[in-house]
Amino acid sequence: MKLTTAVLAAGAAVSLATVVVGAARLRQDARHQAERNEATVARNQLDWLTQMSANPDLAKLWTPEDLDVEEYMQLLKANQLICMLSLRDRLGFVRDGRLPFYASKLMERDVCRRYWARFGGLRAQEAEGDERAEHFTKVLDKAAKNHLGAQPVAA
Image (tube, rainbow, N blue to C red):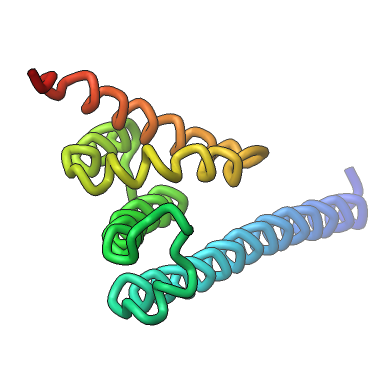
């Protein structure tokens, strides 16, 4: 092989490596930007839930007609906990296989089960088309049903 051919081949290999590294970097930047956007949107939602669950006058504006304002505020607090777990899951801070454990812990609380009984169907509709959200919703639904099944039946 001539020296010029070897130099050209080495140059092509370096160029190809640079393109591959650049493409990987662009993908990584896009993923990080999507995570930042998701965290920002979640922060806005959590701030709104905090305000709604702490201010009866504000909550009254959004309370469904068939609910008491105090009950609605309690359900919003449960939703806030569920949203925090959802964000942790979406950002990869829930280790593989641990989501059912955390969901079960949430559903040990009566207020979380009441929230899920009332709004779990809505969350399932919101999750449609998003594999990760659909999985999260199914895990929480199963945890809620497991805790309902484990409750002693009142005589």
